[in-house]
Image 1 (cartoon, one colour):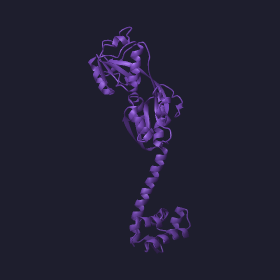
Image 2 (cartoon, one colour):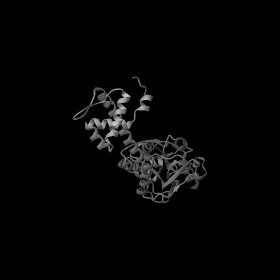
Image 3 (cartoon, rainbow, N blue to C red):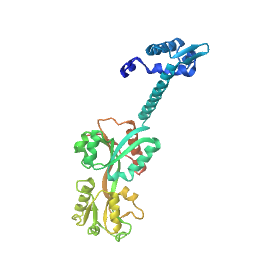
Image 4 (cartoon, rainbow, N blue to C red):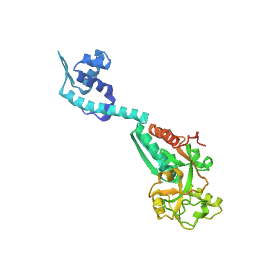
Length: 325
């Protein structure tokens, strides 16, 4: 008998293999029927169907029950392998539905990558350690198209001030997590730390590390100097690399701007220290962007919940989620 995969799939049914496996384990049609909550004639009929398909006996009947024939052993070995895969499939589907396994791809900006995101990841792993998370760092012009196209599940970062009128708002929603502030920082031993009445003008002639043009943080920086009646500093390195920027500030001369939570994470020896300027510097809202028209998988939904918890524990109650415009 030569059978194709299609012909086998049409004639064989998984429940037949389940019955055959139980009969082999029990050594009795009656006991197998009791375990399977079936009648003995129903179990006998299933075995006859299998034997008819294979055109050979799978069981030998005797006074003390049944035993498996040589062909039956071959079929049983393959059947048990398939049933194990089926059970694994059931377990994985259930885990996927519950969000306890799966894969989440998260895009992030500098504003959320050093504090909020690690906290949320720890919460996720505590609840679902088998979830695989891939983190992609980039700018909005890279991450938003990836989110809309399904390459990324969620994006965490600053909400643009003009979000309601941006084209992406038609396809994406955003949960506002907390309001972030900015601070100007330098190396721990910068000579201007602690100066009374320190202002932005006092730092203007220092070497600066600024975000590149086009980034949301650069727009904030430009407004900051404009409102202070100052031109942009003349001695500038443009960089969004936190590690590079912190290393540059170790000359105890270079200064730059960081989100407040990021600066707090880096306030240790060899890190940075915020200048006391006596004025709050608002950066903007930090949010979790999600697809407005595509349903998130269970693992991504769970991670979204963890972001909300992490933001609340960071010190701010999350505002209501914003729907897509």
